[in-house]
Length: 112
Image (spheres, rainbow, N blue to C red):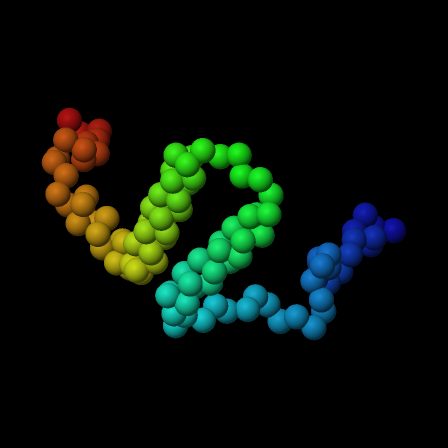
């Protein structure tokens, strides 16, 4: 008998993957970003309402600090969500064009 006679023939079988599944589901491109943000905000409000019955041992300064952090985080998320990948790449390329030649990779050749 050959060493390869015991080898499995055919595709690998992965755990947790049904045989009827075709592949990954595609995301919808035209999702309204405001709806997503509102869902996040409502879920946070619901979480805060659930936490109210427990005693809050934070100081007013800590509460204000956490609220400002959440606000800034939401602003960052909205800022990142407004640009597409293509726009980010174009901005990055513009930034690289404005840099001085000091940051360029020097040419190396054997014929010097």
